[in-house]
Length: 367
Image (cartoon, one colour):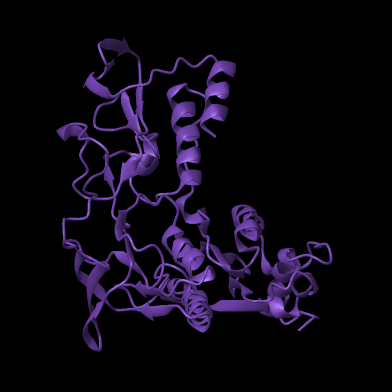
């Protein structure tokens, strides 16, 4: 991937300078011993999680993984996870190869920002496969031992100690890599650069912009991609477009996978919508049966008055691929009727989208 980016730089005649950069003023950046001047400066440094304090977790609410088997050498990993759900993917990978896995989560759901129905179904799936899940729990102390790691956990049932071979602390908290000056600091989002998203991601300095993870949540590569395009087009005077943060897809790369866009059922009801909800299980899908991937379902949430698609939630093997159709449908303000009568090929996983829309209006044939 890095070589691909290098070739694109050459193709578009981008002058790449490798090194540690420092912004000197509104139009000057120093890289090594060289100073580069520009009309505009765009910060896209990414972020990193805070370091795990030696022998103790100082920040509460982070995820941990404990493996009961594996290499004798103990290790603690403080990893930069740029994709939502990456932490669960690691746990599942270990579980698949026979490792006993314990998941510690501070929230009451393993996917707290996803639809509750999806999160509950995934939790049942993992539990059925032997993963021990401790929700409403927090890790209070981690220390290396001769045989592995000792992890102290506070749970609703009381304190307990786990002594695995491997412990991974997978933090969702993020900070930009280096301080970029008091003017750029965002006190509302500590560790990030304050920008005006409605006006092209400009910082407090009119010629300096910031996009991507350093600009704050959602920390997703596809969001950074669209922010960058909007920012550069505005700098060049080509467009005044902005990113629609109400239509951002989220993917959790578990097995089965999870993908969503828009409002959860709980959020939609809290917003005052009267709802029609359609669900279609992959167990009833011919394509899912042929692939032996029948776990999960599609759940579509519509406004009952106008038929507007408010949210889409998928649990299943093809979830992260299927969600793009629903992002497009939501962007184009498609209704339940329009989704239902858009012909879907058979046999495909995507038929479940059509069938879920049919369920919402009482016209699904295959369940």
